[in-house]
Image 1 (tube, rainbow, N blue to C red):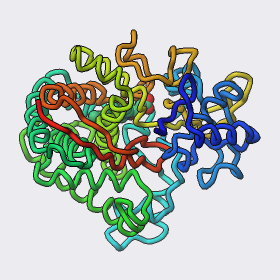
Image 2 (spheres, helix red, strand yellow; image 1 turned 180 degrees about the vertical axis):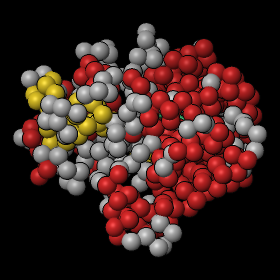
Image 3 (cartoon, rainbow, N blue to C red; image 1 turned 60 degrees about the horizontal axis):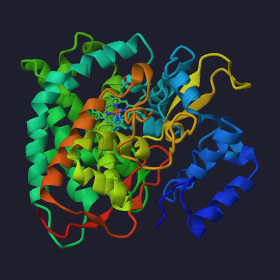
Length: 449
Ligand code: HEM
């Protein structure tokens, strides 16, 4: 078993060796943003060391791969302080530690084939803009436009739809035969929910999944898009489809789906094209990988922690706290990034104005000064909703209640159907410093209840 725990749990020989290697490195060479650490789980050793020795950490250009220099906040208190101070830590034009876009990539969604290099460069220079990468006052306008889509009333109306669909998905699963849980359950359920939120035709829901997968991954062999051309073409396709639907929604009576809410917001006529596609993209990606990976994570963690599994099966009332503990442990988005608006001093280090800062939720969620026995998965913890996985402050996850609802419903429906779900071997994990998830997870369900 290669579960990545760093304290209180026996390490495999391979993990112990990786940990030793990381502890032997000069501090300035530690690059927690290197995606290569994530499939193995070795980033946990980096974060463990940084929390103890260098909680406000600088990775210089020469050790950052192609990310360019950046800072890392790794302690709970510093992450929370930065996330709740948008005046010092601006989200404007920045979301993650990703490699900066080229002019061709930035312009791809808007390029009908006739754009000049200067026009493309102008789009790149303006930067990404979406509700997730805006400061007030624009942030309130853009978030306010769509927040009703996940109001308590709307969630209550969605619950029976989610339950019915979850039941259909689970009833169609093979018994006694190996299958990929990610594809057959996690992706299906989240795609269905997204199509409902966008009021997008259910039969075309996998198109939403495809756009989201392509958006959040670098192209390459075996990836959702094999080449940059394919990725850019898909981003253009998404933009054209969303613009077209929003145009149609403007002519129809207002409804509660995200696209209708956006179309009928008094401000949306003034959105730039970058903002329009940005907001649709955040609504698409925000609810997709995150919830999907939490569903898969819960299956994996309960399989690897039989005592916790037994607790849950003996007492289904633990479902909500198991869901929150899974969201903490999994931390489906490892970090969000900000830019300092002036020099900021934290724990004796001065972060210069304009530098990028990663708030590592994944590390804060394992901070022993805040959470006892933080590396362990304990489904009946005292304060299970005490975690950083949804962020803090004005950008706190808009869909957090919806995510919890989907997880609760799928588990209620699984518990009544299946006495066991067994994970076979190790899952295939995502190669990403941002989305912490599972590409494939083989399971067997031996029998029905
Ligand atoms: C377990 C599942 C989820 C996790 C872990 C998660 C995590 C996050 C995080 C970390 C942020 C940024 C917080 C910050 O910058 O302080 C965020 C923002 C956001 N999330 Fe989620 N999310 C989840 C599910 C969803 C779902 C289901 C939706 C669907 C509507 C959604 C929509 C959004 C949106 C629209 C934002 C931007 C909010 C803003 O900038 O004001 N998320 N989410």
